[in-house]
Image 1 (cartoon, one colour):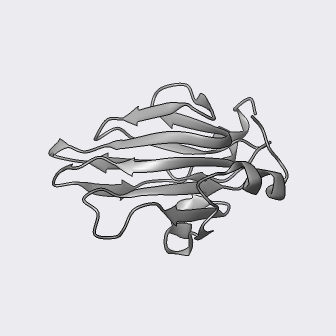
Image 2: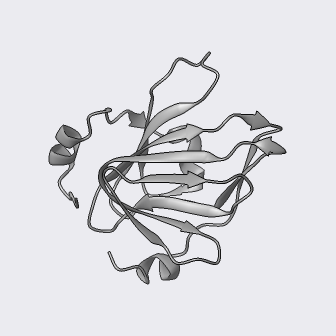
Length: 145
């Protein structure tokens, strides 16, 4: 469901808006917000990530020797997910994306909507995140949003 108005989106976003994601802002185009959902001592990282319209993260890879990867659970608004070399996939509330380790990808909001997903970092051996290049305006503008 596309939602352009911030206040309407905040009402639909049951997991909370969180704080502006300043620590990772250099890896995003546009503003994102982060609300951790588990204690920092939890064995997994899980947070609600919110993207303003047109916001997206850079291409990135969740590296792991064994296990690893990421799971996205879409909770509000409309967004995009794309793996390198594949077409972008439209994301809506209730969609789940399982991202294997070592796969280059990006995700973010459609131009016409705010978007939130719960990001779950899958446990594994020698896990690390590699941030890559931005998703260009030309790449993004080719999407049907």
